[in-house]
Image 1 (tube, helix red, strand yellow):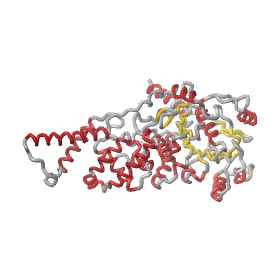
Image 2 (tube, rainbow, N blue to C red):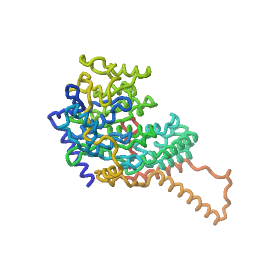
Image 3 (tube, one colour):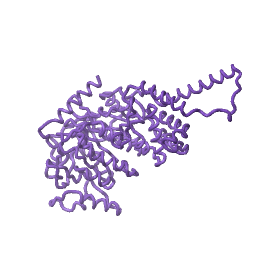
Image 4 (cartoon, rainbow, N blue to C red):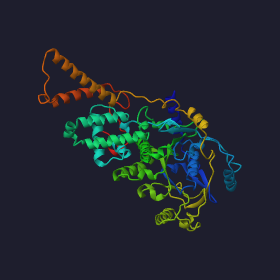
Length: 518
């Protein structure tokens, strides 16, 4: 039933996407004129920037409600815990009433909630978000664990050996068992793939332990998240707003940024080419976007830029939310055609440089005046806005008063949160973790079998009164025999695997993108 409902939602989204008539613009603010975001230009990506307390989160909520209203699903991380109010009808807020009166929208602006699905890596404030170790792959996992180049190379070897032996890496205990296997067989493995030092394996194991202490182990396991559960509409045709609880997740910035990069990369890999659509298939908001680029190695930055540049053709719009535009690399910032710039502070030389650089990126508006000075004077809820026009060119920058949300501003109560979770279309699907046979179980069974065979051999020797060989007399195991057993073992395991994570270990996250898939 859940699958059928998801298919029906997907078909409804596709019908909306294929509309030949252009959709009306989405009102996001007023500046003497209505400032509208064109749905057909929404997948040209965007930037929402501004200092703390200037209104970025409310602007994000306004955009999410607007997209949901035309049937476009949304994904957003809730950094401070107050985005969940979008699920409830607004009203009763004097500041909101004052804003609506100022914009002349009092009689036409209704209050209503949006359809929301709540997610949480820790499974406490929403449905659990899980994936497998194999799908994340060694490159992203190495970044999550803060490994150096040598340690990351050893991790890559562990993945390669697991692939060749048909060993599924689903959760952290699978990876830990695989690392131990690689370390125990370092001489044989090193002759094929290069040196595997116990020090590097030990460092990776310690990093895994630190990740577990931070709760990151809950991210790895099954059932793994199906990203098409993000792309759904409700019974009224409104796009689902997927909110990831990230207030606790932010205490582990690398886990947060890696998780969102994995989601973005998976979308890139799994969605088909779509071309120019009447509206996006999904809009992805990346809050605290600077965390994605902090300390990222050049190779990863290159691939991030590639994903951002190409995912537009899959019908996905990416909106970066950050305090300062200079936190985003120029090559990525250049892909953001829709810009909402809240107030910036210019107390330091670096901030002054950022203000100057920001002002130069806007298309000048002769009637507006000095943009560089104006951005430091904006009030809460005001922004300098430049959106793409129907011909793809940016509109002249406008000083805009952003509209108020239809939903509640602020966090919802625990009882309201539980009601939203219970009424979700994926309720009950991800809650119970599944631990099926994978590398940990197979390697454990293999070790137990070897011990049993050795004990049986010793028992036979005792019965025949065969003296036990000394350590110097014990023959070394034959490489040929070991290789043959590994081949037989691998084929046996491969025959027993028949699910999505089976026959070839899928490395979805950066498989095609980063070249880690076999």
